[in-house]
Length: 294
Image (cartoon, rainbow, N blue to C red; front, side, top):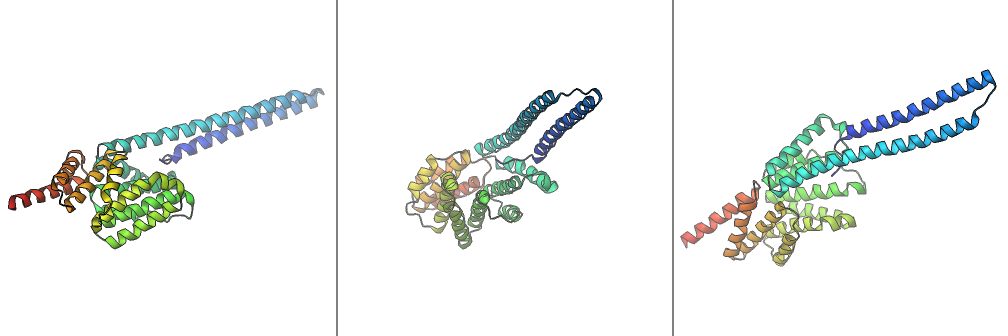
């Protein structure tokens, strides 16, 4: 997660530097008083003054370190709270709740853009679009993705570029535009190829999107082994549901009806309010209809 509360950080910076300058001002006043005292009495306290100033400078450094550390801890706590909310909604596949969380963040970002970091704004928009993609609302997902600002040519923004192209790929898969889906899938892969750290962290996600593309193209050779491996490595319930759904589609394509039904039933029971549930139910209804008519 990225810092969402820049105002908190700004307050701590202002207070930190304010404290620093107050201590410096106090030392300047001390020196002036000592100088006046020396002029009036002829007595100097240079050694004492130097020691006091040195101790004060060290105290200021410690003060700033502690103050900034406290700020980072508070921001980190805020980020962890948001991460926990996100994790809980994904764990239970409560996509509507997920959307509400990021809808509120996006309203805040639009109302007070200067109060949020750029990374936070990018993260909010991308996660917000993910919510609508998993809900199957491709119109809203597109509208949100189109709000993204232009990316900068920085390595630090590779993660946002990857999710941007991955989200667009899923959007085009949703509206069955396979040509555009393939184009954005390739762009996402190029981002990962150019960043070893991201490739290690998000290769499974990219592979999962690639599998969805392969199933849509009905090019399913080797897909089952890959999907089973992805299912084993799933990090949350949403990933488990999506990968069961993919296996269901694969088994149905291969006319493995019983196995397909098992996968679709899992999706219906565990998919919450994701679009996978409606799709799985549709497949099951089709299977039942074909069995009745056979």
